[in-house]
Image 1 (cartoon, rainbow, N blue to C red):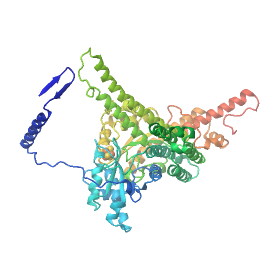
Image 2: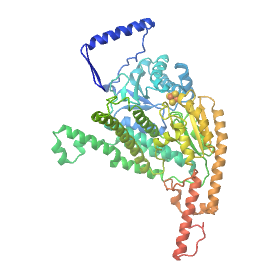
Image 3: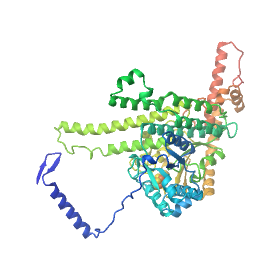
Image 4: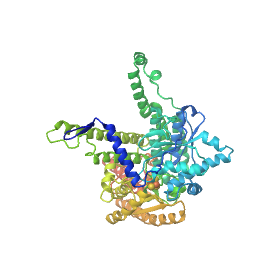
Length: 600
Ligand code: SF4
C-alpha cells in the first residue's frame, strides 16, 4: 500500500481492494457484536413503470392546490398530450378514509390527500371499473421530498394506504423537490420537455396571480357573484391557450433564410430551437394576448373600495394555507362572509423560499465543501480554487432567484399590476432570525415568523391568521416562538389555528373573536384617514360616482406607508385627486371655484 499525502489532499493508491475488504470485515464484526446482522433495511418498492407508449390510455391524477392552479396545470398536461384529471377538493370524509387506511400519527395533510386519492379510486370502482383496470389506467402525480418533516413520508404513505385500501400496485409519480420529475421507478413515462416545463411555469404563475386577484376584488364587488363568474370565464380562456397553443418549432416557424442555413447544423439548430421556445412561452404573442384578454375581462368588474374591511394575512403551513375546502375549514370564504379581505399566499413564495434556503445552506457549508481543506497561506492557487467553487455556486443561486422573481413579477405586472410582488426572502429570514433560525428547515421554516413580523411592521394587514394542520412539526415550532414575537410587537393581532379535520365551529368562533379586534383596528384607521382628509365619506363616494375609472379593479391606488386598509388607502387617494382638481381649477381661473368634494 502506498499512501501519498500533502498538506491539503490525501490520495490512496495501491491495494484499495484490500483496504475495502478489511473495512467490510470490521463492519461485519461490529454489526454481529451489536446484534444487527439480521436487520432487513427498508427498500423502496419496485413499482411498475409508467411508459411512454401508455400515455394514450393512462390518466394522470393530481390535486391539492386551488381550482385556478389545477385548471391551468391540467391544461398544460393536456396540451402536452397527457390524459389528465384533477382530484376533487379533499373533504372530511376523505380525511377519515386517510386515517382508516394510513399510519397513525401523521400530520393531517397526509390524511386528507391520501384519503382523497383512495376516495376517488373507490368512486371509479363504484362506477363499474375493476381494481385492475383502475391500477392499469390511472397514475397519481404528486410532490415528494426527503423531509425533514413528514412531507418526506408522503410517498410511502400513499403506497401504504393504497395497499390497505386494496389498490396495491397503483402507481405514484413524484415531482421531487430536488430531483425534478421522475417516475418513482425511474422510468420517464412523464417527460420533462421544454414545452412542458415552461407551460407549468406559466400555469403556476398565472394560478398564483389570479388567486391573489380574486381575493383582492371579490370583497369589493358591487354585484354579488360577478367576480366568480368573470374569473371562471377568464381562467377558461387562459386554459384554452395553454392547452391549444401551437408550440414554437424552429424549423417551421423560424425565418426561412436561417432555417435553410442551419438545416444540417444540429447543435446550433437545437440550441436556437430551445431558446426560441423559451422566448415564445414567456413573451410570445399568443400567450401575452391571452393574458391581456384575461386582464380586460377582469377589469370590467365593478368595485366599491370604500367598504371598510380588515385585511387578514394568511400564513401557516403550505397545504393548509392553500386548500379551499374542509382542510382549512373553508377559512377564506368564512373570512369573506365575516367581512374581511384575505391576503393569500403564493406558491411562488414557497419556491423562492426553497431557493433561498439552498443558497444559505451552501453558504453554511462553504468550509466543508472546499476542494482544498487546509491550504497554507502561500498556496494562492488553492485559495483561489476554493473561492471560485463557492462563488460559482452562489452566482447560480442568485441567477435562479432573480429569474424566478422576474418570471413571477412579469405575470403580476401584465395582469393588472395590483397583485403583491414576492417579499424578498432575505428580508423574511432577517426579520425571523432573532426568533427562528434561518437554517431550521421543514415546512415553511422561518417564513411563518418572518411573514408575521413583515406584514405587521410594514402595516400591510390588520391581523395575521396562521393555518396549521394538526400534527405539523415545523408549525408547532413556529408557534412556540410566536409568543416571543407577539411580546416584541405589541400591536400585532396574530391567531394560530390548528386545522384538525374536525372542530370547524370552534375554529370559526376563535377567528371571529380575533376578527372583531381586527375590524375595530380597520375602522379606527379608516376614520382617522377620513378625518385627515377633511371630507365626508359621501363626498368621496360622489366623486367616485362621477369617475367610473375609480371603480375598475385595476385602477392603481398608490400605496401609502403606514395604512393597511384598502378603503383607507382609497379615500386618501380620492381626496388627493379632488384637491388636485380643485387646485387646478382655482389656479387656472378657467372655471368657477369648485368646493372640495363636489362632484366633477
Ligand atoms: S409541513 Fe407540517 S403538515 Fe406539512 S408535511 Fe410537514 S409536518 Fe406535515
